[in-house]
Image 1 (cartoon, one colour):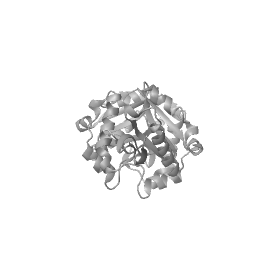
Image 2 (image 1 turned 90 degrees about the horizontal axis):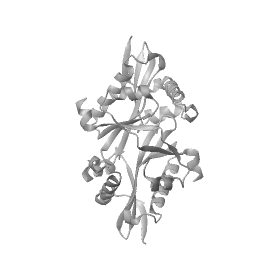
Image 3 (image 1 turned 120 degrees about the vertical axis):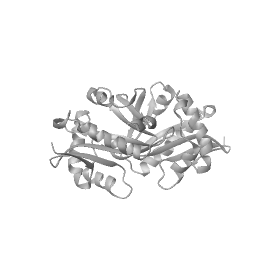
Image 4 (image 1 turned 180 degrees about the vertical axis):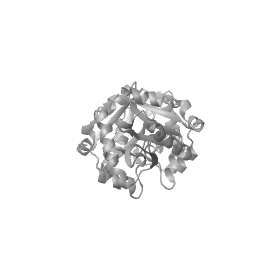
Length: 155
Length: 155
């Protein structure tokens, strides 16, 4: 397997978007995906990028990604948040997720962040088992709250 | 009650920090608070600020705050995340939280974000009831995962 882990580029975004779609379907939320490749180009590769991207490539085909950005914890200061870690179905269980995750860990250390955090769905056992390989604290006591763009407009 | 809602300033941070301590104690996590006023000065008021701040002042005394920043949802694009909404015990139930929250809603609309989100502890009934006054979607299916700075260094 000719595997490369590298920084994502603008030209990767159409393949990146397919992986995001695959995750949305896995998470039973495909109707939630309203972002577009064009938005992702502007948001990640213009001035003041909103996210950073690491990709996994096998024989020139994108098979996985890690997408992260920086947040602010009032308790811990500047922190890194991993929004998505995706490996396409066919390439799972081959250590690609681990290589991507380790790259994000490396970045978090390099940036000396106060903490590194992410979320996992409570029924996603393979992901939870994977994260147990790291010194991860799991905290189930929080509820995610959201107001959508559409509902914001009514307020 | 002589109440002002305004943007937070660097000079507010020592009072801001006291409110953050008060919330950490309420959330039974006072040992988790390792950030400092000095860090918050650099992080929020230098170049490339990591957060924005709105404060509530009664008779020149800081009694509440909303601290937020921008994140990236792969599903919704650029989004606003409310990290902390705090009103000091003595001034609760007087509509100050609502005024602060409404200011953040205003900001989210102005920035045309894809969504506005935050988290609430599942036992914090007064907060949950408050958020029910808005078109909030509550999602309990997620687990927060964290690796601390100390544990990152061992990886």
